[in-house]
Amino acid sequence: MTPQHAGSRDVAVIMVNHNGGELLRAAVQAVLANRPGRLLLVDNASSDGSLRLLEDLLPADSIVSNAKNLGFAAACMQAAARCNQPYLLLLNPDCLLPAGALDALVDAMQTHPQYALLAPLVRDEHGDEQSGSRRRLPTPWRLLAYAAGRRDCMDLRQQPLPDEVQALPAVSGACMLLRQSAWQQVGGLDRGYFLHFEDLDLMLRLQQRNWLVGILPGLAVTHTGGHSSAGKSLFVARCKHRSLMRYLRRHHRWHPLTWTLLPVLNWGHYAWLWLRHRDRNGDVRT
Image (cartoon, rainbow, N blue to C red; front, side, top):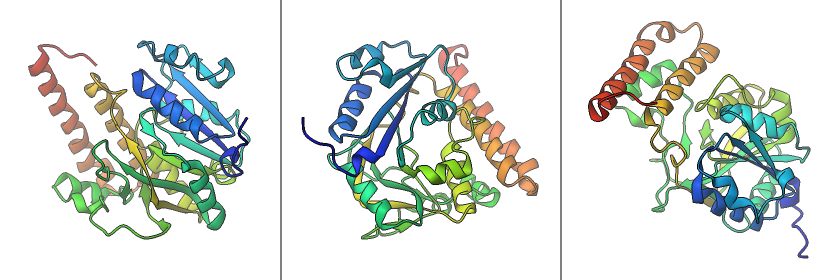
């Protein structure tokens, strides 16, 4: 048997699946090729048979099957409680790691001990840098500017890519390596987020504890994105809108926009999506 690399065996990879389909198998194969210390997959009540595609890849003790969909944050916390490796990699089931990715991320973490979280550059299936790969954290004023069409107030992709590790306010949550000690210090993910904004909440809390969050630009992963949400656009939108309000009330509780204009815009946008969905389908299915 080929020995594990010193860096990769220090990593526990956590994946949360909900109807990931064939992309899930490809993502798991890519992880196993990186030889992690552990891979734990939490299945949130999938109904597409995607777990059957893994029967020849993963032993039974690498899979946690939930009877209902607990949400992303709760499922990650469920898996993290079983891991004692120095590093945790939270990886979406539609994200493909290239060869040597775990070693590269761990090497960068060891070289930069002030970082609690590092992410690779995240590209879509066409090779373009994905929205959210480099970004600012939401604030009430930034969200208002974003709603008015100022995408650059949050999106940092227009800035030149750095040549080495760079600290950023926020990176993509599709693939992020976390230092276990920092994860424990802030208590991991907030289970109150069902889907979306749990990654940004974590990044903000880490920085409040004087840790750095950043990107390793020399490493790129491919993220298809949205596969598990296909056909559930209204449900996903409702989760995103709820999570946004949780984020604002947790971190910008006393800002006047948190209680005035932003809730109107937030739920007004959801109402518009709901009406459009109803007109298209003749009913509302979430």
